[in-house]
Length: 380
Image (cartoon, rainbow, N blue to C red):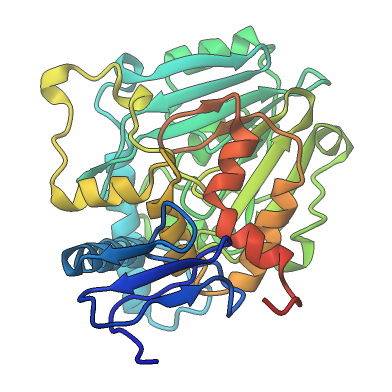
């Protein structure tokens, strides 16, 4: 049987039939012949032929190439970098990024929201690369002990200080949820010097380089009390007080080295870049209408790849082909462990908070990874 040209990926059961392009190609049955639930074509029923127009194939390819380019331009740290010129370039990029993270009037545009009686979010506008409106969000949690933990801190405004004080003011943990969400750690550490700093491997070195170069006054070289490593990926412990309330998964296979947290008492999943939920409506809700960004073509394409609406096909493709491509097996394992947690709310750093149905949304977005992990070792 001749194999049609074009982008062909497999699709979860039930078995469907797909043809690409002209009808001269015979239908090809697809299911899980390789054990990888990836697909570019869809079907509305069993044994139905669904043509994928060449223009759509091109559009899909463009989406993936665009998203890959966006990801490749992230100023990620690499502890094995061997060039001082590369280090200087990374530092300069980070300094420029830091300035963009701070709105000129953060108190006027920050949205402070009580998600639960013990979980508060601080949402702000943020343009990635100065073009893509993805927003930013920090999260404040009051532990059952009464102490406070701050995840992915944003600007420490007067209103944010007041909110912290209203919950007791005892900040004991400052968490950089990945190697990107750390710009305001120093600001919070100065205000709450007794807090433990927590972050993923590579981040302390990254911050020391930037601080030593003096390129960004916001970034200091404060010591970290707890650093997540691959060896501690499934058993990271902060201290007894923290561990009583939180489960932690270190997704080291993610390019940004994600730390994902479950606040058990209120079933809240807190994460940074593992899952976006664009558009960033809340994070731009206090920005005057005439000052809101007008995204261009690439920004709109990227936003589509980071939307959880519908069956989230664009995000699934992005996760499978871009985010997890470096070590998909380890990524699948992390996602499967998170899927075993009991949560109903998801707080992302970028896009809308999910209140209610968070577990179902997570399973839908990571469906291909969960199916691949469940079928591991099974001939499909």
